[in-house]
Length: 372
Image (cartoon, one colour):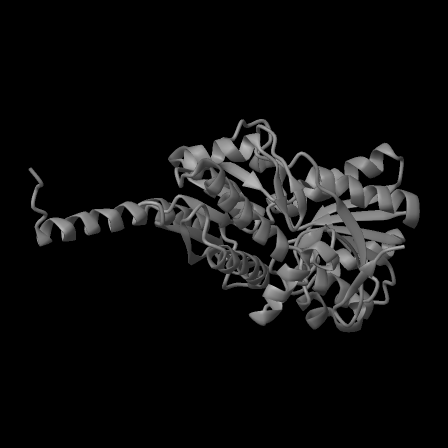
């Protein structure tokens, strides 16, 4: 005997079908953690531009394994204590994926929280080896190389191209700046390049005339500075004002147009190490257009490393058909990913298996060119 189908049964079945579909199209929050205030906010802007562009592109293409990504912007001001507060907030809100943090000093303490709480973090900019060194990280990743890759690239250029007679190595006494300065000094010492001064300065000071006087009295002809652009800019400007005509070099933390806004013409000729300029790769033409369509600047060291971080998380979600951070992290460790920064693969620590830093010359119009 044929059963009678009642209208309310049809409605219930339809509702169940809709729920079944929606179970595969959840919204997954992804935190973008970095400085949107303070002296280093421009680096946070770079990361935000890259992450937001990636999220928009991924959502427009159907999502991350069918999941819609929702950005959550959080400001840590590149301050370690504030970063820890941000990390705890991310955990308390149940957010399981993070792009950031930006500065190494903020990323290191935050990463401990994420690792313990099972939150996948991909930093597009923190280069300090201490983040991962000697630790088998399950949930912590980078889309940038480490300072023990960047430092030797700088040192090799100094040794082979600059060939200075007396070098000063300065740093800002912070984990990132002092760390990379120490790596550069060690490489120069090994090559028997004379380092006549190794000294820290206080980040945030406005007068570095004392250390500049030392440069002058020691007859230094080359200065490597480990730190960020505000201090580098003041060193450049004040050295120029005191008639100290030497070449300065720094890591990617000095690669900011504000170095020219502060130092002016004295920024001409500064050397720096940066990730390769991925925006010039023809394979990234569509990504570059996506930045332009949103009137976002793609020309910085961290925009495309941030974009790559989001894409890797999204591809891992698609590969696992899951937004479970443990499954996503496991997939990330085991598989290569095609990204705007090239093919990315991870080791057991969450570090990239390879990454190339390039030496650039900075110009007084805030542009850069590959160094000779």
